[in-house]
Image 1 (cartoon, rainbow, N blue to C red):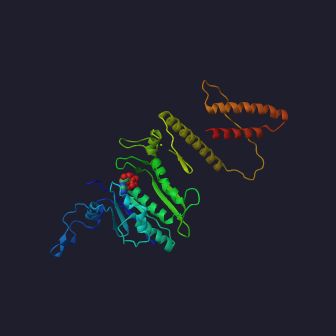
Image 2: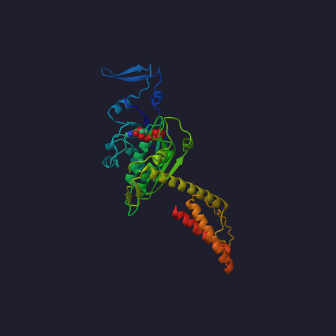
Image 3: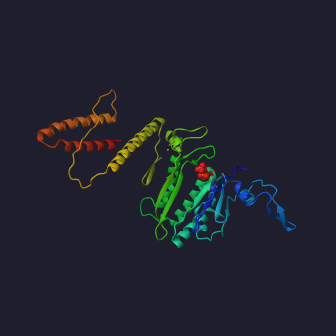
Length: 363
Ligand SMILES: Nc1ncnc2c1ncn2[C@@H]1O[C@H](COP(=O)(O)OP(=O)(O)OP(=O)(O)O)[C@@H](O)[C@H]1O
C-alpha cells in the first residue's frame, strides 16, 4: 500500500476557533485506552460488550475509505485528508465546484470545497471573518489542500476583470512563484514548504474578492547555505541554473518563446544576480532615508555629490564607461559653470540624476 500521510483542515465556526493537530495513530489512542469497555458490532448478536486488549494504531475508517480512493473523511467539523500520492483531477474541476456551491455541509462527500463553501457562507451570512487551519505532518498534503481551498474561494468570490489580471487570478498565480522561492526537496517531501503562509482573501459587501494579502512566517533561511544530502536548496536556484530546451518569457498579455543556449542562460542568470544585488542596495538606501526622515516643506538645500572616480582598465565594464563619461561631462560643465557663474552644485545634481537614470535604463 502506498505511504499514507494525513492533513487536517479545521473550520472555525463563527464564534469559536477550532485548533487541532493530527498525527497518525494518535487519534484512536486518545479515545480508547487498553482496558476500556466498548460495544463491538457483531453479525449475530448485533452488539456485544468488549474490552480493549490492544491498540494496533490503525485508523480503520480512514484505511477502508482510502482503499476506495475516498481520501477525505469528516470527523465533526474537521476534514481529514489522506495523501493519495496520485492525481484525481476530476475531484477539483469546475464541475465539482459547481456541485459543492451552496450544498449543505455534510450532504456531499467530504471535500475541501465543502469546508471553503461553509466558511464563505458563514462570512456572508453572519458578516464575521473566518479562518481555516490546515495542519499535519510534513508531506501530508497541506499545501495541496490549501490550493483547493483557495481555488474554491476564488471561484465563489471571483469577479470578471475588465482589463489586466483579476485579484483571484493573481492569488492563484502567486503559488508557483512562492513555491519556487520558498519550497525545496526534503527527505519527506519533494516540494516541501519551508515557510508558513497565511493568505488573507478580502471580500467586498457583495461577497466578491476585493483584495488579498499573503503573510509569510519563519522562512528556513539556513537552507540557503546549508543542506544535507539528499535534500536540496530552494527550487529557484535549480530553475535558474537549468537550461531548458526553450524556461518562456511572459509579458503582459502574451508569452514569447525564446531558445536559450547554456551561454545565454548564464548571461541571463548573471543579469538577474546584478539586478537583485542593485535592488538590495537601493532598498538599503531607502531604509536609511526613511529612518533619517525628510522635510517635505524644505525649499532650500545644499547637495554634496560624491561619485566614484574615473579609472581605466584593460577591459572596462559598462559601469566604468558610464562613470568615466560622466566624470568627463562633469568637468566640462564645471568649467562652463564657473565661467558663467552658475551654481555648480545644482548642475552637478542634475547630472548625477541623469547618470543614475542612464545606468538604470541601460541595465
Ligand atoms: N490531494 C492530493 N492529490 C494529489 N497529490 C497530493 C495531494 N495531496 C498531496 N499530494 C502529493 O503529496 C505531495 C506533498 O504534499 P504537500 O506539499 O501538500 O505536503 P505538505 O503537508 O504541504 O508538506 P510540507 O509541510 O513539507 O510543506 C504533493 O507534492 C503531491 O505530490
